[in-house]
Image (cartoon, rainbow, N blue to C red; front, side, top):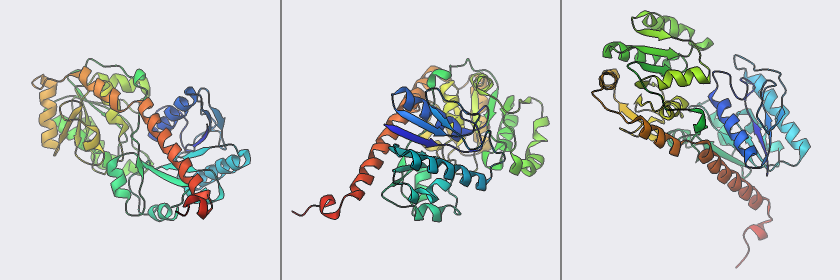
Length: 358
């Protein structure tokens, strides 16, 4: 089979630091190629995936994200796919690809990587077609995308070999964008209330600077707080593996949350508010706990840091490895690709062939 994957024009594949969507595209493309499929990936020019043909319009990532460059990138990719004429399925990870899908006869799968966005819902509704199949990355995200669209659900998966179980420690970890919806200020408050040191990796994006100045900067000056900036893979794993818990006090409907499964693969429990995908991903008592508020998060954290709450890090890793591997994700996507091809083929049949008379 020959698949075309369209990543974003914003961050390289794989991403050097920040870039959840691009990391998933990397694992998907690499595993498909490893299984013997032909894969062409449309990404930035500084991207590289073993065994995969690379195509790029822009030599490096466009940052901050710009919708016009995204549209240009999607048009470049779909033009090239039409010219080739030998692609079995297009897997698109940028919304403008849907607006252009009508120009392509090839079945198109689109994965929604973001929280519900009412400005995009009309586009998704207008994109209903036998040749287009939508994918959500959690059941909660799928629920929130209705009624305009329905979607298959495919959980993200990571290369479990790239993560090792850490020894833990007496500190907590926070990893992610310094944004209000990620609740970094609440993580700082919970650790402070628990009397547990906190190490943070991440940074505010351009749109989050005001929040950072109001709510985060002064909290970073508290005793026991260490901010390491944005972290690459090795530093990220050391941070997560050396913590007694990863704090995930989200204040939005998180579509997935790769940080949670990265933490679990390092054997570190996740303490999260019960919003978005968290109730689907966290197995209480095995890979973490869902908490109601900062007070309960601080209470759980204190118990873990002092050893009063025992935790089996190997069992945590085993559960995450079983549920969130690249192999499991790719198995599921291959099912979606096959369904997309079958549906497109059926829609292309004449009426008397598609629904023969009895």
